Length: 430
Image 1 (cartoon, rainbow, N blue to C red):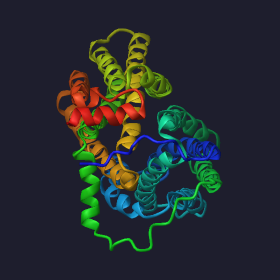
Image 2: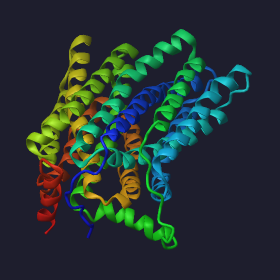
Image 3: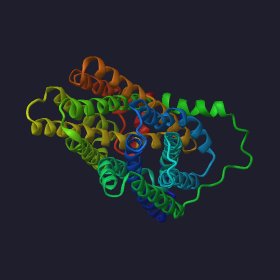
Image 4: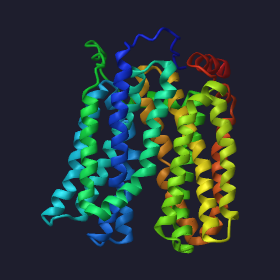
């Protein structure tokens, strides 16, 4: 049984609100820059190195491989380390990786092996940075401000996902793919600078701490996720939802671009509307939490927004009708995703002892992102065998199944404030 933190006065000095603002200012620019690299690397592989589809698929797989392999060892490694210097070093290393591409390209030595290395190490760095960042936030803001802080961080992620691909395409056309990566390198340097300005310092680990038992520490992180009913049910929801999102990504590009021949502009508009919906949901999450509580806000919005997936297989007609309908459907469903993201990370932070934050976040990320390659593979197999139109009918069932774990009383009972979250969890478990 986990030890719950007792409500108490927030000891953080007022200046640490400024620390969070600095962390956010670095993160939001970095998130936008990262979208440039995610766009440019496969683009360069195809246009500069004339890579085959299998080689481009391997490039994407190497980046996502870190989501499955890195979280658990990273969580254990971060547990007894200050997160601030780790974040700074990850930003600097990522900047070096990204900037190496235009440098090597300028001397005519760029190869697929180089892009593979950048993707593999860059994905690992992104995982480590994310775990460290999420574990640091509760030290910078009080429990009553966690939902708002996580909302702001998720807004940065959603804005990056919305504007990043369009910015990447524009920069690539303006200055070339290789030179566009310079902006992402600068975004990492900016993130390192802002993180270095944090005033907060984490206390060093006790000098007399017992020798580390790594297998035990990994198990504790996993138990934190699986033995807390509310966190476990939210994790199952996220795992199913992430698999469905990858299935959706595969179906959308095939259905709109290949089958209907709408081109990149129409496809991009649909994705942008999805990003706008995520921003709206993320911004609305703190108010919804205050009004309905953590559990009911997440369950209620997702239970409503998931129904928009029924629009996708039913819509037909002119190009305008189809694109508008798909954009509207993705915008509505992404509102639920935005709210769910804020609730998920905030509840985990509130219900987990600080000493376990890194291992818990690592375990949660491994569980929920481990389904990403499965969803992508399943999407490709289904589209290849039954077609994109038929696969669209599967999406509502997948995303509805993802909502079902949230119906459990341990999630529904999570209240409106940090105190109520802890009290309601005890009531639900006991």
